[in-house]
Each structure stands twice: as structure tokens, then as C-alpha cells.
Amino acid sequence: MRFEDLPTPCFVVDVALIEKNLKILNGVMQRTGAKIVLAQKAFSMTALYPLIGEYLSGTTASGLYEARLGHEEMGKETHVFAPAYREEEFDEILSICDHIIFNSFSQLEKYKDRALRSGRKVGLRINPECSTQVGHEIYDPCSPGSRFGVKREDFRPDLLDGVSGLHFHTLCQQNSDDLETTLRAVEEKFGTWLPQMEWINFGGGHHITRDDYDIPTLEACIKRMQNRYGLEVYLEPGEAVALNAGYLIASVLDLHKNGIGIAILDTSATCHMPDVLEMPYRPPLLDSGLPGEKPFTYRLTGQTCLTGDVVGDYSFDRPLVCGDRVVFGDMAIYSMVKTNTFNGMALPAIALQDKDGDCRIVREFGYEDFKYRLA
Ligand SMILES: *Cc1c(COP(=O)(O)O)cnc(C)c1O
Image 1 (cartoon, rainbow, N blue to C red):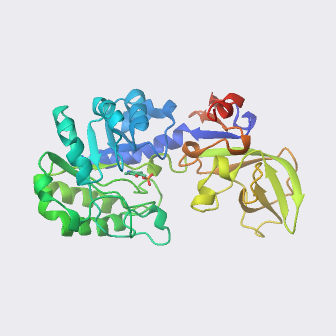
Image 2 (cartoon, rainbow, N blue to C red):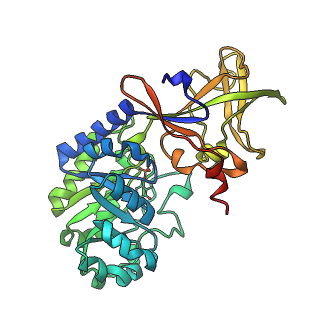
Image 3 (tube, protein in one colour):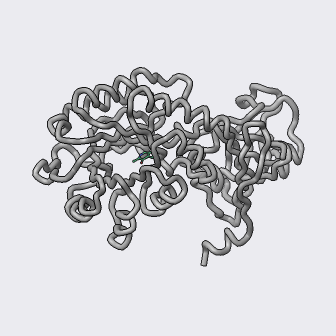
């Protein structure tokens, strides 16, 4: 099937672009010996797990369901971190996760012995209290009042017995200079205990596959931890695996005017790309400009009854007409995983574009997907 013939709305993930990212990540693994696992929270398209598994060391998860997904569909190393574990889920987590990372000493005390008896690696998330991101507190685990990780002042060296690794995750879409700054804080606050560890996990948020990412600095950070403390280094990026590797195609259903030209699409910001409203950001759109940059400017809006269901303002070379298709870029990450059926919106189909350019639909959704999750 050609790209132009796919139904809308539809997510399309480009296999060649995913593989390009995987090769960059695998290069870091080859040159440094570090292990990189996919953070499934950002991207969980299981149809691509066999391909991802050819390049990466496994998956990480935010809880039982993601852990099961990684274990079943990729089956390599399975890591898990959760702010707190549920008692009734812990046996199953134990049966599938190689690394189990705890967010507090109380969780560690509660579950550590069972994890060690099952032969699992036990880790502790630390909070290096080193904010390197400006402007979006909801993505900053070092922000005041954050529930993530143990601070130096609450650290309990007497309870470290059996803990083989430390984990931090403080970055979001950042370059390796911020990793370097963060590592300095980690060493300053927790350096005393690094020599007794086997591994350290740098978390995610490393934009390794972005054009301007400084890979040599990342590799120097990895080697420093390996050489200075004898640690095995793990990274768990999500975004970097599928960055700029997917699209969301939509069609224009109607055109309207209220001070500005308005196009109503068969997609929705709130249902299909909620980060546009939560983050918030203006997604890239192929063949378009900023408002006013090209002759015809439109506000692209969604099909729900939420007034704020607006993707953004874009300009075009020619006027839009009903039936036109628009293609949003960088939609593989944090969009497919966050869709919902609010307002009875249909979920977008999911397709793959193969290396030869041919497209195939992997999954389609219908009325039942809406109905059965409500009661
Ligand atoms: C979100 C998250 C990741 C992945 O982050 P990206 O920004 O997608 O790279 C990795 N580890 C943890 C603990 C996370 O919460």
C-alpha cells in the first residue's frame, strides 16, 4: 500500500528511520560496552520489538504491564522501576524482571529479600538534586517536592546490603553536557558508595539520535563511570529510539473561519497527541510554515468538543480543501502510547512503512475499543 492510500487518522512508523536510530545507539554500545534498553513508556510498538532487540539489550518498564510486554515481545533483559510496587503484582514482576529498581528505602526493605532470593539485581533510585532543565517542572524529577529517588540527606548506607546498582533519571530531551553536570552531582553526593556497586543506570532523557547530540561527551561519561568505579553502565532512553521516525496522517473534514481560517481534522490533539496540550508544543507538519510564512494560514483543530482541541497554527502554499491530507512529524514517541478515546474519538490505525517505501497496516481499531474500556 502507498503512503497516500493509508486510511486516516493513522500513525505510520518508518522502519528505516527506526533502524537509523538503533544503529546510532548500538554504536555507543559497541564503542563503550554500555548497555542500552528501550524505555517502553515512550514507544511500545511491539511489531518492531524483534528489530529493536537486534540492536539493544532489552527493555525497561514503569510497572508490571510494560515489563510483561517487554518480556513477552522482546525477551532480552527486562528492567523495571516503579515509584511503588503493588504487593499482588510483585511475584509476577519477580518472575520476569532482571533488574528491579526501588524508589525508596521503605520499598527496598519491603521487597529486597524476595528479589535477591529470586536472583534478581536490586537497584535504588537516587535524587541527585541537580535540575538541568528549565521551564518544565512536570518533567523534572529534581524539582522541589518531587517523589522520585532518595536524596543524600535521606540516604541509609546501613540498608545498602544487597543493592547492586544506583539509578538516576533526571533528564528530558537533553544533550550530554547536562548528563556531565548531573554525573558530577551524583559523584559528589553518592560517590562514596559507587565503588561497592556493580552497575549504574543513567536513566533516560538522552536525545542521542538528535543531529546536534554530542556523542563523544556521552561516551566519556560512560567510560568515566566504568574506569573510575568499575561499574557496568546502563542507559534507558525512550525518545531517542523512535525520535523523528513516525508520522500521524489526518484528513481535513471541514473548513471554518473565526478571525483565522480553521481546518477541522479527523484527528484530535487531546486524544491522539495529548503532549501537544500537556507539554505543550507545536508538532512539526510536513510542507507547512509558521503562521503567515506561507500565503494561507490555518488553525488545525481536532474533532472533539473540547474548545482547546487545537494542534496549532500553520501556513500553506495553497488553500486547504476538504479531503486534503496533512502529515504531522515526530509522532512515534509519546503519541501512540498516550492515545485515548475521549468523546468517542476513534483510535488512529497503526501502520509500518517498510524500507522499500511500501506501507502496511498493522492494527486498526473500532467501536469496540471505545465501548469495552468504559464498562
Ligand atoms: C521516562 C523515563 C525514561 C525514558 O525517558 P525518555 O525521555 O523517553 O528518553 C527512562 N527511565 C525512566 C525512569 C523514565 O521515567
